[in-house]
Length: 304
Ligand SMILES: Nc1ncnc2c1ncn2[C@@H]1O[C@H](COP(=O)(O)OP(=O)(O)OP(=O)(O)O)[C@@H](O)[C@H]1O
Ligand SMILES: [Mg+2]
Image 1 (cartoon, rainbow, N blue to C red):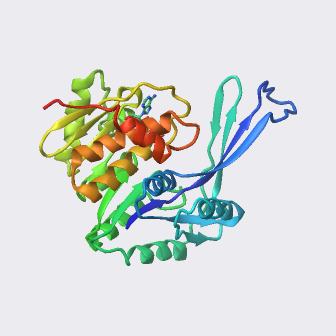
Image 2 (cartoon, rainbow, N blue to C red):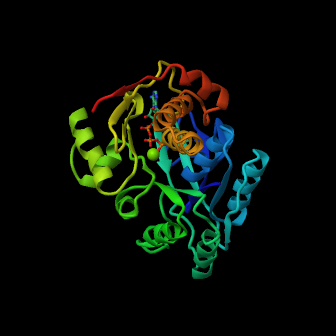
Image 3 (cartoon, helix red, strand yellow):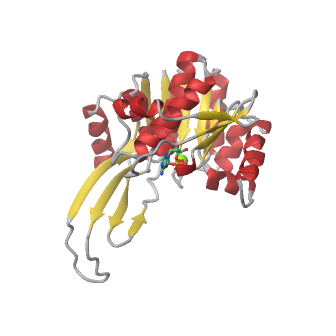
């Protein structure tokens, strides 16, 4: 089983106001609500690709109910830890420009933390756990660290898609995969990346620090894969970008699902590239059909 953990999911409330007047009454031209959260995205794409997945994390209140209902309607297995507070709402305001206003996230009480940690105890070494996204501010800074230690103790392999301290904590526990994008890589090492040589240099450091595989994604420029045996660049196919939110999450789903299925790292990289671009070329997340079509159009080149 591939578990995803989303500690701070959200309802993404996308509001279109064509002519926005700040300080005045505005009418929405269109509005949509989505079940948001990086681990949830990963589970949705895993499910789409036919891999067994269960989405875990914290959900509460009427907003949490909305997310559970959405996942149930899509047939995505989920076993979220219930919390008292409401799951947050993130506002995506689309006008002449795009403005995002993200909620901080609910207070998570100690009993709720314990309930999530207890759930993780039933994970076995046959399972994989994908930790994605941010931690609600009410949890201590070292919560990701605690979580990773708990998962590592079960013998399950894990994937970390987070930034800063959480990523540093993950690396020391030998994650199967980390997937920073280029900006996140620069932030981790507190450097500016000026060219591909720089990205290769710091990407390789992810392996030196403990990652078994690392993908550094570079949006429209494709991605670099770092393995114990070599470094590879994967291309992006031609296509019309519609909404690249979740492209990185789709990449993680493709790689993790495939590498568990076949143990073939390059096949997994190929599927991850196709899934990332298929999401970038869709309004919502990628469909299996679109991913399949793009698999033929992605190329991988060995660099070192
Ligand atoms: N504009 C694009 N055109 C083609 N492919 C894209 C584009 N944007 C993303 N992709 C594909 O998806 C992969 C992941 O994208 P990106 O680097 O934007 O991840 P990310 O920043 O982690 O995204 P997110 O966190 O929103 O899921 C890229 O490596 C690429 O293969
Ligand atoms: Mg990302």
